[in-house]
Length: 136
Image (cartoon, rainbow, N blue to C red; front, side, top):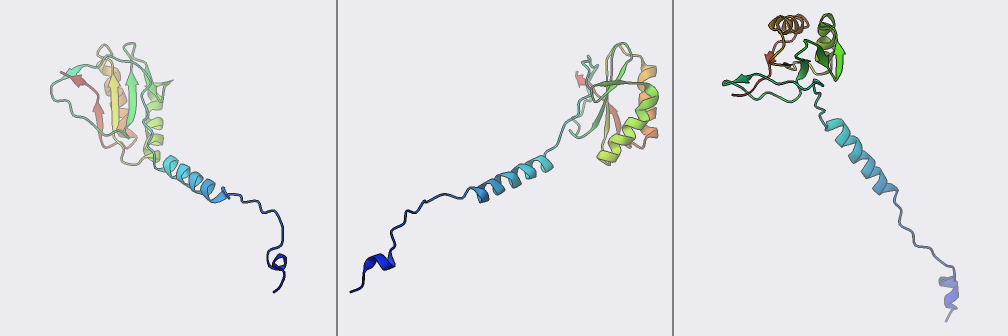
């Protein structure tokens, strides 16, 4: 018979697990979840909303505009001028076409400010403009 060392040379084998495919899958899953996730943009101010008996729950991907009791206008947690509402709503509609505009106005804010913000949102091309309210 022949020598078995010819067929089975004595060398030390190191068994290692290749983690590259697992890391590829993890990164692909991470990218998938980032791309498919939705981000809720808040108006950025705390207001006491008026009560309404006919309140309707709206969609979550809406553009929110906040009006404080001091008639300050906030979008994306930053103070804006009422002349800049139109440009900001246009930008928001470009990011998510067909999104509704929800105005979160304080009960103590002036109706004049609310109407001006609604007009600017409609001039920006928003088809669905509504005012947020608490359940009565």
